[in-house]
Picture 1 (tube, rainbow over the protein chains, first blue to last red):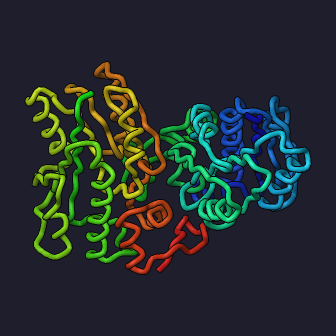
Picture 2: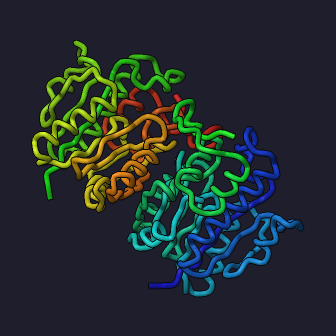
Picture 3: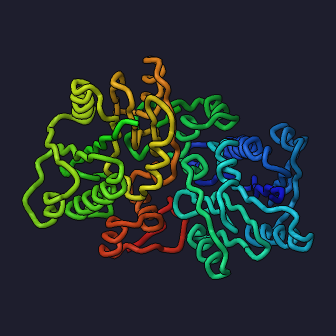
Length: 222
Length: 222
């Protein structure tokens, strides 16, 4: 088995804008960073981790921990998501594909190391992990032939792409890996199932479980 | 291993009211029924299936298929969810607990037989399958000591209850089993991941994937 290089694309600028009805701009950035740290913790047992930063890390205390990060590399790359990721894939192709590539979104704070062990033991030239609403929350690429296409319903696009290339595609379905945190109703999942910095941060911000499930699944209050 | 009795609580009256912004009352009932049939298909390999009907099955063509159902029993029970289910559990206790009980919600049309095989091979006196927003989408009960409590954040309540009783609780986490269909933004999951009657019905109603993921994850149109 080849080693795995984990790539986590991340942006701070306008991070988590769909949470703006419940979190301030600073809180959204703090949450994005806490979720990134939780993702790094869960993937770090798999191999080398590269954070693909769309914007430079700003000065300031909040980002000190990330800037001084051990065990991962930060690569600044101003390109959009698809060209940035496909450039990383092509660099690996040029190096002779000595590592497989796992692309993990940065907003998966429910994910645990044990989930990732199950993911990487799933067979397939590519293994796709669906997110809510047709997205691709993680994708493990074991072949130099594949390129990503994240816009729109990327789960179906990635499946179709694999088929067109004659590649085998595995689907790893997981509640925790499938729960990307984008909207206010997602925060309750972090409080219920999260175990790292993101739930701690939300609690420090005053969020708590409301004990109710009704009303568009809000389920938490502050 | 004991055989498994599958219990699926179901109600038609005001079924799926949170979909009323996109589906008429008749369409919601049709969808509820199509989802129930998909659930019956996915669980039917496990053992005896009992549908616990809150209201009597009305006359009419739509319900003929359910009324003439093979391989499952319909039990009319006007009680609320918790007392109805706990009465079934107590009846099993009186019979000497010859079967374990799997309670499956009726709105899980993404669920597949293979997911259920993995669920029933998960260890634990109880095995809990979380749904979105803190719910319990399925629960496998292997002990006469346990009773259910579905209101509110039942996933955490069921975990706590098991702990209080000194029982071991397994968590089976699954994207497909975790996707209960309640709200308009859930319909896209049926179109993407469903394989039975529910996606077929939605397509016949004119729903199709929009190819976009934005705007509260609508992702489908008609």
